[in-house]
Image 1: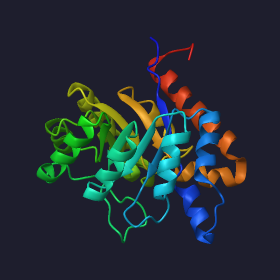
Image 2: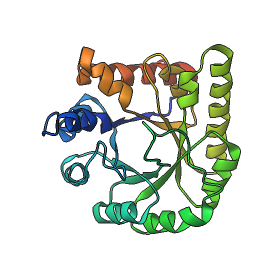
Image 3: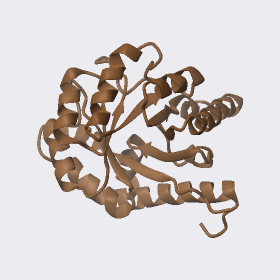
Image 4: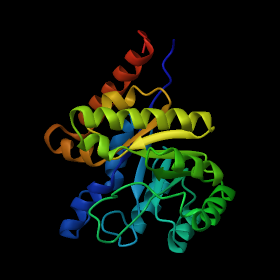
Length: 252
């Protein structure tokens, strides 16, 4: 059996976080995106937050213009962000929950409760040819809501799995596996992300229903010690190994 290829999206937000700590131009997140592509990234993810704490409007403009890989724009479902997405028409827009007080995204979007708010945003993005993704928990209720919203993609929040240990981690993994299978049944492409590192990526990559992993903070942090190129290549190799072992594909 040939393993389904698992894409790697590299999130370059925290290169911009380091840049913004000094207020100058370095390090350049667009340069990091180019390096990620050269190292084997299948796409680039960037979250333009309402408070602009890391990625800036200028970064999105440059990424859309200069990077020869699909751009996944993470965004809140606001009028301002919708306008920006429609102006730059990235390959994909991942709608995420956003609170100004959070350090990072703290969980999945409640697509079930926010149907009436999300529907016109999903509709406008889709009409513009932008592939819409919803960042949700591994919860059947949220997946069914995504189907009602006609979102072609979901990204499962796997932060709780990454933070857990032992039996608790195993329980989270089973929930993620079941959610990915349900997404496939519903005809929704399933991705996963948030908190993945070298020690946690293998069991997630082994879930055959998953099509893409989006990883950022760990890669940027680990690059301090080993360089971005080698860090991404190691992550790519771990993903490929886990996927091949899951399917028994000795040629992968």
